[in-house]
Length: 97
Image (cartoon, rainbow, N blue to C red):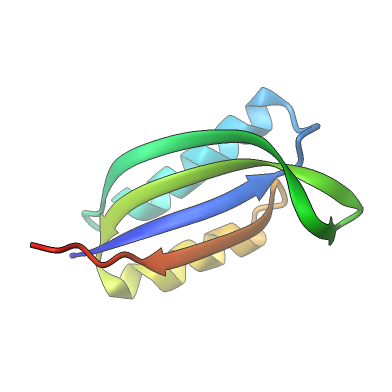
């Protein structure tokens, strides 16, 4: 399993149920095939560098996790079809062992 981090943001006007639903879908996509979530950091509202879907700010969340590289495509698909998630980025972390 490799170490990854996922940074995504949702509309700051989204309800708590929408945020929780997005997080639950992400959690299921990561853990379905044995992946583990190491930490979740809620960064809160941040100003965007440029307008995205007529939004000037977003509510950011950072997730550090371990998963099989083959499962990242499924996670990306889940994030793309989720209307609550406006933008996301999955990056492979270098972990010195």
